[in-house]
Image 1 (spheres, rainbow, N blue to C red):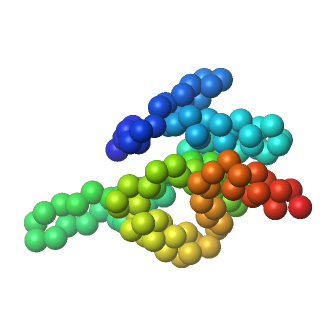
Image 2 (cartoon, one colour; image 1 turned 90 degrees about the vertical axis):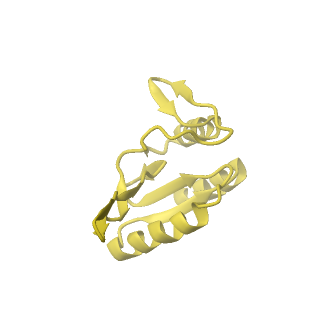
Length: 122
């Protein structure tokens, strides 16, 4: 689902961009303050293809990266993880490993983001 509600998140619109949470919008602001160019939710990655089993059709499952930087890094901004997140994360990481294109960085706090920015800049 494209506009699935994140539990406890308040969507925010800044400069015409609709972020799914205040935390994501704050992370975007910090990236901008540090002159780091990024794309917000630029594409979807199919991590489970659609299939059919005994006549029943199953939809494909997609992951939408929060931020993509330099077409190399995926920053996943994670406030509160739901029950299925740990399984979804494993499937997404497996797909990213197969594609061998992106480094996946999970950000849970602003401190973690600032630490990653320092590493990125050095």
